[in-house]
Image (cartoon, rainbow over all chains, first blue to last red; front, side):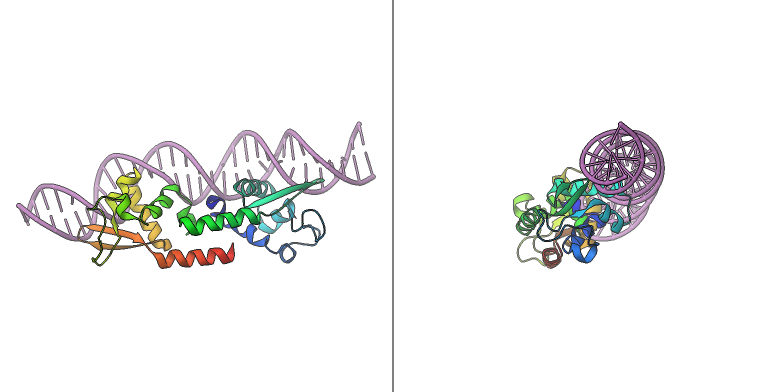
Length: 98
Length: 98
DNA sequence: TGTACATTTCGATTTAGATCGATATAATAA
DNA sequence: TTATTATATCGATCTAAATCGAAATGTACA
């Protein structure tokens, strides 16, 4: 997880996803009431980060595997959002071990 | 600082330095009452990490510049110890931003 | 002063990470 | 079924990190 955070773009993505409505267009993220609130689709994150779509796709997979993000496929879109449980667990172990 | 922590050896060094007396020989670290208590010399850290001394020297410089460690030269030895202020500041900003 | 030892710096090599474009896969819509 | 769009994967290239041994620097001491 530390390695996932050690890249500046990946770090920023995690910040953007704290407030999707502030950083992404209304069509890019899933709204209140849906079954994956706060999730943002890959293309929107790629556009915002100004990196190739393939790069960002790989980043997101990596961040999910490390426990920073969680994802859900919805039709042709894959939505990613913060995995708050994973992040909090990381924070705790970080405070203890460091 | 995140990048400094993203290397496993560097991370372990920081852990070792939490309890120098448990991880290093009595001659390797500075004892209570001296002017740099808890400091461990480069050679001892290099030996423990099983990497070339030149590698570890570079690591320690990097960790100091990032704010994780502080150092003091004492004769021919350079002693390194945790920079608790820097580490705590990092923890705080980490909890807030993440 | 010159030898011994600790540390740092340097140059070279190997490995890992970043990044892209092209292609493959998956889902939708005509 | 075919064309379109979204995402994921692949192969190639370039850059950064890891790592080593050798040489340079700094310090102590005979």
